Length: 293
Image (tube, rainbow, N blue to C red):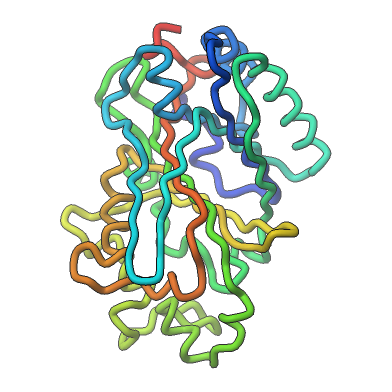
């Protein structure tokens, strides 16, 4: 898949930095985007463009739209759109700092950096709750089929749509539960990661069993934990050939289908929600030909 940004299909790195940018008023972003495209090479950077940026350029990407907001009894899933997202990947924090400086320099003066989230891999790719993350991720050709656009022509084939959310965990509350209650929130046993057949219908694994949807709702998850002075949680990152599968999962989590709300909301809250289109690559740079750039 030479047209795909390589970092999308690779496992999560040891360390990462997420950078979120807004557009500055009365600035044409095209030149900055071209510079970013030319310097985005290899597996250490994944770039996504938001709806407001695409509209500023005057281009529509089929399937691109705003992240939907949800509210229910005791929970909110906000929509927090931004213009551009960069996922910096690596194993050395200093290298990530220098890479972030390069990105910010390329995007000046058309963009403002509005948020930075530093993340990391915990143990063998576990969530900070201790449970394994991404257990049912598709692999190989199945991952490509789930996450990558095909059959749409040059400039679109090899691209991907990504949903990004920052979740804040209440680890104190979760640690106050006994083992069975915690396992029933997730739907798997912490001890061996085995799915619990008689777990409640609200268990997270039961709510999001991707093969139970019609059509099946497989996404490629590349989530990573985060922690700072404000708390700790998970940066949820979900790549898809469209947003359809992700929205099917989120509809079921929020009880939109049957009124059963995912038990995950007992221990975690969504702080943000954004959609981006990740362009393909051509040669060793981002391919922005769909935007006439």
